[in-house]
Length: 142
Image 1 (cartoon, rainbow, N blue to C red):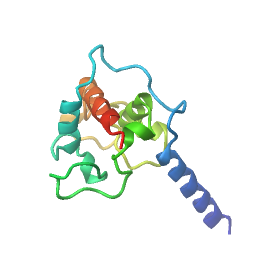
Image 2: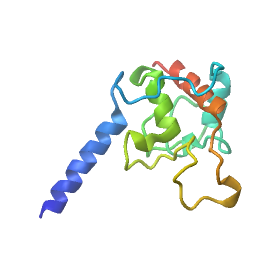
Image 3: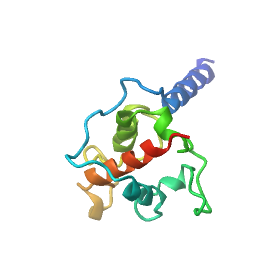
Image 4: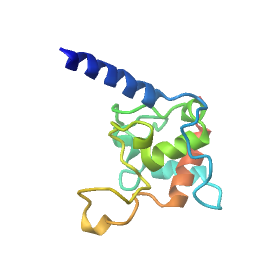
């Protein structure tokens, strides 16, 4: 009989982790590169169905994109809800915030299993691409 209660508590914990707080200690405050992120390039990555694939799970202010996901938080207002460091951590490796996340680790190569040979040792997004996405998401204040 403890199982249903445990599952309910785990679900509540997962939702709390996904919602996050505006400015907590759950972030990567330092840039991954010496160069500043470019929000224009970041928007292209987020909206791309070949690079970032973000819109498979997320929705957001992308009126030109017909199909958007509903499995993850809406990206509208992301720059208001999370700090730059919090966004960076969630993109680099969201499992550090929520171990049960379905979001892929976009900048992790160690400890992954079932990786196609062409992708072994390579992150989904490079360091500058991560910074570009963070810069774009920080512009989403509404």
